[in-house]
Length: 269
Image (cartoon, rainbow, N blue to C red; front, top):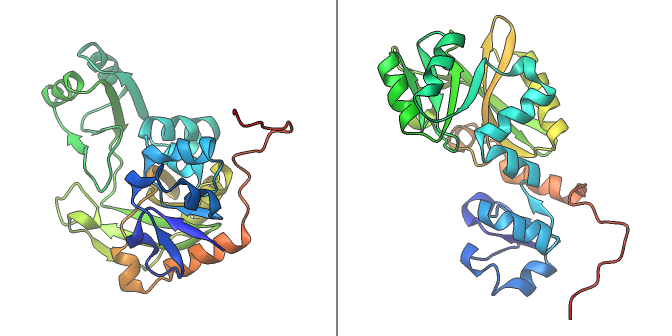
């Protein structure tokens, strides 16, 4: 099996992988075309690889397209799994949206930038003045209820299964539960309902490599977001064989997307 990667650090444990620098995608086209799989492209490469070169990529197309943008992610979840989404508003930026937010929701609120990870671009808004400042400096407003939690779950889904899950417990008075921001990790007492829901959602959307951030309130999981390229620190400490699981998946799986049309494709001469 011929494998090309654009991210050597995420494929260190996979043997025989050819690394190509992302900016050389077009000059190394022949090697890419000959590959059975292209691994961990950057987001800007996805459309060229999938729609242009008709390559199989890992993570999947839907993992990239939904995981790249919290608005698109949330709308997809609203369409199929609305019961697992916290109360969320997506509105145009500007002061006029503040009144609508305050009519529907109660301070404090969680506001997020559309594209961010590891807690960056996420903050707690406690006053109307802070909310107005956020509304005036963002073109798209992503506003979410603050859930009554002091921890959340990171569920790592790779291939077709949950690989591991752990609590991320923030320090006392700390709004953030991200490991990158000093949260404590615990692998104990993971609710089975969370694993079931994440598995159902990931399989439905054909997401095959993501770290799901999940709140668990009164027995119900709430999907806060998922990140295609998640941190591996806790996995390394736990000796989770991530690369082995990826390789096992690549060997047995043929993606259903992109779909080959039932008419012949002629190259333009």
